[in-house]
Length: 202
Image (tube, rainbow, N blue to C red):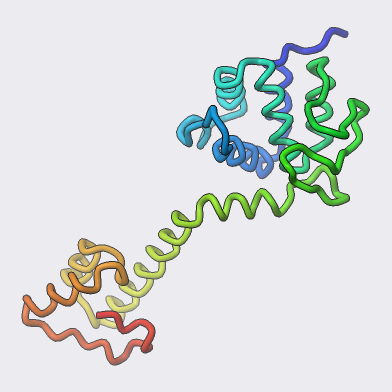
């Protein structure tokens, strides 16, 4: 049987990844360090056909196979990488790999895979956390601030108007000076003695 077209092989490989591995593949594609870079909006929320189009249009068909293989090996999905190379009739670009379908621990990109070979590694999670640290911290801060405000409203320490004012200013910790000046200009005294000392930011 003739090898699949490279586009078909990439598409088939992506379709057969687990949801978790597919998301990790997209994150790795989006976070590549060298040119050409792939914008976030070309990857997030896309299906396997869209990602195939992005790979081929960004890297050409030959380059798309090499990039897909690199990402798969970085995620320790060596069996999938070997299958992709075999289906496209090409040679692996990874040192120490073979087309025989076996797992290789000497993967491209410097990532090291454990004996599990075909499962995602903690390296992908670490990369994700490192590359999205600011966004994740912002989300956690927003959630914490909302929980504090909801608690203050429930205990009737603040009313809806005060809650709205605080939310307009921004997160509780980031604009303490604005909040202080707003409180004093309104001539209000907001009691905060009931809060734990690390939360007394008003």
